[in-house]
Length: 307
Ligand code: PAF
Image (tube, rainbow, N blue to C red):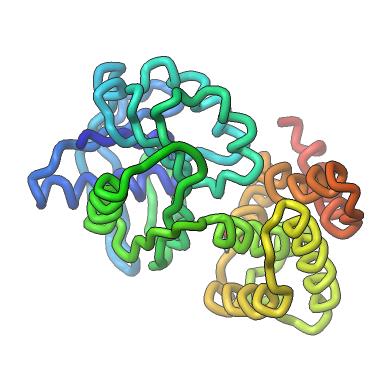
């Protein structure tokens, strides 16, 4: 199957690299990249963990590749998902499988109307790390597994197995979930806690486990759990607390994506993290003062960036 990766950021190039290397080894159809703006680059640099950067050829997708693609992987920031899909949806095959690397919470509602009846939308929750060093130059910063599941549309079991095997060859440790909602909400909760706190306090992820932040961490989790319950998703506060503790420990020296965005004076994904919890809180009349405050604090920082 031909695959098109949409987005040339760190996750886009990581997926492009892993799948194109696996495809050329296994003799599968090619992979191409649909960047957000036209590019003169014909190669990209990829740096494995603790290794030197190497150059690889870049196969840029044209409209033909996009129309032929059976699989489209959208690797853009949450706030770009809608415009990315708006710009290509008329070119995509009627039966294409579309994968979002964003968890889909808050973005699905925005793109649902663009999908054709036989298209299927999935989410791929990656825990692998990648960092953009420069345009078309990325570094793989950490191994991890990937959880895959259906947001909307039908995917017959044979196609589902084929897809998991195909992604597995490139990305490794890809797990299919019949019910991906739990995993989507777990990822959202991790991001609601680690991202804004590390960004506002200007600390690495591991510092979240310090005693001084524990009360705030508990309050944030508790609000997400209440909002999730209104969306008919049952989450356990204690398991989430342990999970966040583990993620912070495993990535203790890392800079969260939101802290990196604030340091670089870029727009953050706060509207789809604590901002999403705030919106759902309003919808269900559940008070979310801690998530709302973090959303407002990060928005206030962004306002100073003139973006
Ligand atoms: O957004 C991020 O940086 C990551 O999702 C996480 C898990 C917070 C760790 O860095």
